[in-house]
Image 1 (cartoon, rainbow, N blue to C red):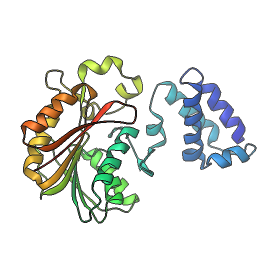
Image 2 (tube, rainbow, N blue to C red; image 1 turned 135 degrees about the horizontal axis):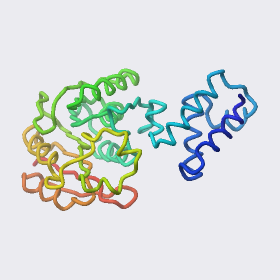
Image 3 (tube, one colour; image 1 turned 120 degrees about the vertical axis):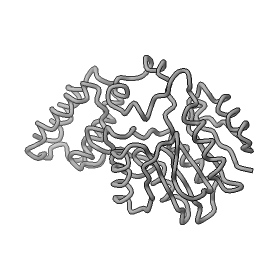
Image 4 (spheres, rainbow, N blue to C red; image 1 turned 30 degrees about the vertical axis):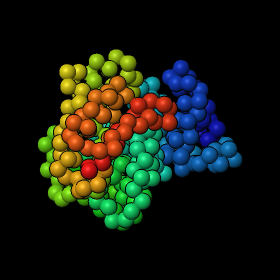
Length: 280
Protein backbone atom coordinates (compact mmCIF):
# COMPACT_ATOMS: atom_id res chain seq x y z
CA UNK A 1 0.00 0.00 0.00
CA UNK A 2 1.26 3.45 -0.97
CA UNK A 3 0.85 6.50 1.25
CA UNK A 4 -1.58 8.04 -1.25
CA UNK A 5 -3.77 4.94 -1.12
CA UNK A 6 -3.74 4.94 2.68
CA UNK A 7 -4.85 8.58 2.78
CA UNK A 8 -7.64 7.87 0.29
CA UNK A 9 -8.77 4.92 2.42
CA UNK A 10 -8.85 7.12 5.51
CA UNK A 11 -10.83 9.85 3.74
CA UNK A 12 -13.33 7.34 2.43
CA UNK A 13 -13.69 5.50 5.74
CA UNK A 14 -14.15 8.69 7.76
CA UNK A 15 -16.62 10.38 5.41
CA UNK A 16 -19.66 11.32 7.44
CA UNK A 17 -17.88 10.73 10.74
CA UNK A 18 -16.43 14.23 11.01
CA UNK A 19 -16.17 17.49 9.09
CA UNK A 20 -13.67 17.53 6.22
CA UNK A 21 -11.27 19.81 8.12
CA UNK A 22 -11.36 17.51 11.16
CA UNK A 23 -10.76 14.46 8.95
CA UNK A 24 -7.74 16.21 7.46
CA UNK A 25 -6.39 16.89 10.97
CA UNK A 26 -6.94 13.24 11.92
CA UNK A 27 -5.04 12.11 8.84
CA UNK A 28 -2.08 14.33 9.79
CA UNK A 29 -1.97 12.77 13.27
CA UNK A 30 -2.26 9.22 11.91
CA UNK A 31 0.47 9.77 9.33
CA UNK A 32 2.81 11.18 11.98
CA UNK A 33 2.07 8.83 14.88
CA UNK A 34 1.54 5.58 12.97
CA UNK A 35 3.78 5.96 9.91
CA UNK A 36 6.28 8.63 11.08
CA UNK A 37 5.46 10.96 8.18
CA UNK A 38 5.27 14.67 8.97
CA UNK A 39 3.36 17.15 6.80
CA UNK A 40 6.30 17.65 4.45
CA UNK A 41 6.65 13.88 3.98
CA UNK A 42 2.95 13.58 3.27
CA UNK A 43 3.20 16.24 0.57
CA UNK A 44 6.34 14.84 -1.07
CA UNK A 45 6.09 11.07 -0.59
CA UNK A 46 2.64 10.17 -1.83
CA UNK A 47 4.02 7.22 -3.81
CA UNK A 48 6.04 5.80 -0.90
CA UNK A 49 5.30 2.21 0.09
CA UNK A 50 4.03 1.76 3.65
CA UNK A 51 4.88 -1.20 5.90
CA UNK A 52 2.95 -4.44 5.46
CA UNK A 53 0.86 -3.75 8.56
CA UNK A 54 -0.59 -0.56 7.05
CA UNK A 55 -3.86 -1.86 5.53
CA UNK A 56 -4.90 -3.70 8.68
CA UNK A 57 -3.87 -0.84 10.95
CA UNK A 58 -5.80 1.71 8.89
CA UNK A 59 -8.89 -0.48 8.87
CA UNK A 60 -8.66 -0.82 12.65
CA UNK A 61 -8.26 2.94 13.15
CA UNK A 62 -11.22 3.71 10.88
CA UNK A 63 -13.42 1.20 12.68
CA UNK A 64 -12.56 2.66 16.09
CA UNK A 65 -13.07 6.24 14.91
CA UNK A 66 -16.45 5.29 13.48
CA UNK A 67 -17.36 4.10 16.98
CA UNK A 68 -16.46 7.63 18.15
CA UNK A 69 -13.37 6.55 20.09
CA UNK A 70 -11.01 9.54 20.48
CA UNK A 71 -8.07 9.42 18.10
CA UNK A 72 -5.72 10.33 20.96
CA UNK A 73 -6.57 7.06 22.71
CA UNK A 74 -6.19 5.10 19.49
CA UNK A 75 -2.68 6.40 18.80
CA UNK A 76 -1.89 6.62 22.53
CA UNK A 77 -0.66 10.21 22.60
CA UNK A 78 -1.51 13.87 22.20
CA UNK A 79 0.25 17.22 21.98
CA UNK A 80 0.12 19.64 24.90
CA UNK A 81 2.08 22.85 25.41
CA UNK A 82 4.62 21.81 22.80
CA UNK A 83 5.16 18.32 24.21
CA UNK A 84 4.02 14.87 23.15
CA UNK A 85 2.26 13.14 26.04
CA UNK A 86 1.03 9.61 26.47
CA UNK A 87 -2.71 9.31 27.11
CA UNK A 88 -4.92 6.34 27.87
CA UNK A 89 -8.56 5.88 28.93
CA UNK A 90 -7.30 6.25 32.52
CA UNK A 91 -6.84 10.01 31.97
CA UNK A 92 -8.68 12.87 30.35
CA UNK A 93 -7.36 14.06 27.03
CA UNK A 94 -5.72 17.47 27.70
CA UNK A 95 -7.57 20.38 26.10
CA UNK A 96 -6.14 23.51 24.44
CA UNK A 97 -7.88 25.67 27.05
CA UNK A 98 -5.77 24.08 29.76
CA UNK A 99 -2.66 25.14 27.85
CA UNK A 100 -3.85 28.69 28.42
CA UNK A 101 -3.97 27.99 32.16
CA UNK A 102 -0.33 26.90 32.04
CA UNK A 103 0.59 30.05 30.10
CA UNK A 104 -1.21 32.22 32.65
CA UNK A 105 0.75 30.68 35.52
CA UNK A 106 4.09 30.96 33.71
CA UNK A 107 3.47 34.58 32.71
CA UNK A 108 2.48 35.63 36.24
CA UNK A 109 5.24 33.77 38.10
CA UNK A 110 8.65 34.68 36.67
CA UNK A 111 10.55 33.83 39.86
CA UNK A 112 12.71 30.77 40.44
CA UNK A 113 12.65 27.84 42.87
CA UNK A 114 8.88 28.01 43.24
CA UNK A 115 7.06 25.15 44.97
CA UNK A 116 4.08 24.02 42.90
CA UNK A 117 1.25 21.55 43.51
CA UNK A 118 -1.05 20.24 40.78
CA UNK A 119 -4.20 18.70 42.28
CA UNK A 120 -5.85 16.03 40.11
CA UNK A 121 -2.97 15.74 37.69
CA UNK A 122 -4.33 13.06 35.33
CA UNK A 123 -1.82 12.69 32.50
CA UNK A 124 0.48 15.12 34.30
CA UNK A 125 0.03 17.70 31.53
CA UNK A 126 -0.10 20.75 33.81
CA UNK A 127 2.56 19.60 36.29
CA UNK A 128 5.01 18.53 33.59
CA UNK A 129 4.53 21.68 31.52
CA UNK A 130 5.12 23.86 34.59
CA UNK A 131 8.18 21.83 35.57
CA UNK A 132 9.63 22.54 32.13
CA UNK A 133 8.59 26.18 31.89
CA UNK A 134 9.18 27.59 35.40
CA UNK A 135 12.73 28.25 36.59
CA UNK A 136 14.02 25.48 38.87
CA UNK A 137 10.53 24.75 40.21
CA UNK A 138 9.81 21.93 42.64
CA UNK A 139 6.61 20.40 41.30
CA UNK A 140 4.34 17.97 43.16
CA UNK A 141 1.21 16.39 41.73
CA UNK A 142 -1.55 14.24 43.16
CA UNK A 143 -4.33 12.08 41.81
CA UNK A 144 -6.71 9.55 43.30
CA UNK A 145 -6.21 7.14 40.39
CA UNK A 146 -3.17 4.86 40.40
CA UNK A 147 -3.62 4.25 36.67
CA UNK A 148 -3.55 8.00 36.02
CA UNK A 149 -0.43 8.38 38.15
CA UNK A 150 1.26 5.65 36.11
CA UNK A 151 0.57 7.63 32.93
CA UNK A 152 1.82 10.85 34.54
CA UNK A 153 4.99 9.09 35.74
CA UNK A 154 5.71 7.75 32.26
CA UNK A 155 5.21 11.21 30.75
CA UNK A 156 7.52 12.84 33.28
CA UNK A 157 10.19 10.24 32.64
CA UNK A 158 9.93 10.51 28.85
CA UNK A 159 10.24 14.30 29.00
CA UNK A 160 13.01 14.10 31.60
CA UNK A 161 11.41 16.31 34.24
CA UNK A 162 11.19 15.72 37.96
CA UNK A 163 7.65 15.70 39.33
CA UNK A 164 6.86 14.12 42.69
CA UNK A 165 3.65 12.13 42.38
CA UNK A 166 1.29 11.29 45.24
CA UNK A 167 -1.79 9.11 45.42
CA UNK A 168 -4.34 11.30 47.19
CA UNK A 169 -7.99 12.29 46.91
CA UNK A 170 -8.64 15.98 46.20
CA UNK A 171 -11.53 15.84 48.63
CA UNK A 172 -9.10 15.03 51.45
CA UNK A 173 -5.63 15.90 50.12
CA UNK A 174 -2.55 14.80 52.02
CA UNK A 175 0.53 16.02 50.09
CA UNK A 176 3.45 17.22 52.20
CA UNK A 177 4.88 20.71 52.43
CA UNK A 178 3.76 24.21 51.63
CA UNK A 179 3.49 25.86 48.23
CA UNK A 180 3.90 29.07 46.28
CA UNK A 181 1.45 27.91 43.59
CA UNK A 182 -1.45 25.48 43.72
CA UNK A 183 -3.27 24.67 40.48
CA UNK A 184 -6.15 22.37 39.68
CA UNK A 185 -8.38 21.39 36.79
CA UNK A 186 -10.83 19.29 38.83
CA UNK A 187 -14.04 17.54 37.77
CA UNK A 188 -16.59 20.29 37.15
CA UNK A 189 -19.16 19.08 34.60
CA UNK A 190 -22.60 18.58 36.15
CA UNK A 191 -24.41 15.33 35.41
CA UNK A 192 -27.25 17.30 33.82
CA UNK A 193 -24.80 18.60 31.18
CA UNK A 194 -24.20 15.10 29.81
CA UNK A 195 -26.91 15.45 27.18
CA UNK A 196 -25.01 18.21 25.41
CA UNK A 197 -21.68 16.34 25.33
CA UNK A 198 -20.18 14.40 22.44
CA UNK A 199 -20.17 10.61 22.41
CA UNK A 200 -16.39 10.45 22.15
CA UNK A 201 -16.21 12.09 25.59
CA UNK A 202 -19.12 10.33 27.28
CA UNK A 203 -18.31 6.84 26.04
CA UNK A 204 -14.55 6.84 26.49
CA UNK A 205 -13.11 9.47 28.85
CA UNK A 206 -13.06 8.70 32.62
CA UNK A 207 -16.25 9.92 34.26
CA UNK A 208 -14.66 10.34 37.68
CA UNK A 209 -12.39 13.03 36.18
CA UNK A 210 -15.31 14.85 34.55
CA UNK A 211 -18.51 14.88 36.56
CA UNK A 212 -19.89 16.34 39.77
CA UNK A 213 -23.40 16.09 41.24
CA UNK A 214 -25.92 18.69 40.14
CA UNK A 215 -26.68 19.49 43.76
CA UNK A 216 -23.02 20.21 44.60
CA UNK A 217 -21.27 21.67 41.54
CA UNK A 218 -18.48 23.20 43.65
CA UNK A 219 -17.73 19.92 45.45
CA UNK A 220 -14.05 19.79 44.49
CA UNK A 221 -13.47 23.54 44.62
CA UNK A 222 -14.59 23.64 48.25
CA UNK A 223 -11.97 21.03 49.20
CA UNK A 224 -9.24 22.58 47.05
CA UNK A 225 -9.77 26.09 48.40
CA UNK A 226 -9.92 24.88 51.99
CA UNK A 227 -6.62 23.06 51.51
CA UNK A 228 -5.01 25.95 49.60
CA UNK A 229 -5.75 28.43 52.39
CA UNK A 230 -3.67 26.23 54.71
CA UNK A 231 -0.97 25.04 52.31
CA UNK A 232 -0.15 28.22 50.41
CA UNK A 233 2.58 30.44 51.81
CA UNK A 234 1.84 34.14 52.28
CA UNK A 235 1.55 35.66 48.82
CA UNK A 236 1.06 32.23 47.24
CA UNK A 237 -1.31 31.90 44.30
CA UNK A 238 -4.18 29.56 43.51
CA UNK A 239 -5.22 28.86 39.90
CA UNK A 240 -8.31 26.90 38.87
CA UNK A 241 -10.00 25.80 35.68
CA UNK A 242 -13.74 26.20 36.19
CA UNK A 243 -17.18 25.51 34.73
CA UNK A 244 -18.23 28.67 32.89
CA UNK A 245 -21.70 28.39 34.47
CA UNK A 246 -20.30 28.92 37.97
CA UNK A 247 -17.81 31.75 37.69
CA UNK A 248 -19.62 33.97 40.19
CA UNK A 249 -20.02 31.12 42.67
CA UNK A 250 -16.32 30.22 42.48
CA UNK A 251 -15.40 33.88 42.93
CA UNK A 252 -17.58 34.10 46.03
CA UNK A 253 -16.06 30.89 47.41
CA UNK A 254 -12.54 32.29 47.05
CA UNK A 255 -13.50 35.57 48.64
CA UNK A 256 -15.34 33.87 51.51
CA UNK A 257 -12.11 32.03 52.37
CA UNK A 258 -10.23 35.30 52.66
CA UNK A 259 -8.22 35.08 49.46
CA UNK A 260 -7.20 38.34 47.80
CA UNK A 261 -6.98 39.58 44.21
CA UNK A 262 -9.73 37.19 43.11
CA UNK A 263 -10.16 37.12 39.35
CA UNK A 264 -12.42 35.24 36.94
CA UNK A 265 -10.70 34.99 33.56
CA UNK A 266 -12.00 34.18 30.08
CA UNK A 267 -10.27 31.79 27.69
CA UNK A 268 -9.31 32.77 24.15
CA UNK A 269 -12.80 31.81 22.95
CA UNK A 270 -14.41 34.34 25.30
CA UNK A 271 -15.74 31.72 27.72
CA UNK A 272 -15.41 32.00 31.48
CA UNK A 273 -12.71 29.40 32.13
CA UNK A 274 -10.27 30.21 34.94
CA UNK A 275 -10.15 31.58 38.46
CA UNK A 276 -7.09 33.00 40.21
CA UNK A 277 -6.48 34.33 43.70
CA UNK A 278 -3.69 35.14 46.15
CA UNK A 279 -3.20 34.35 49.81
CA UNK A 280 -2.73 37.68 51.60
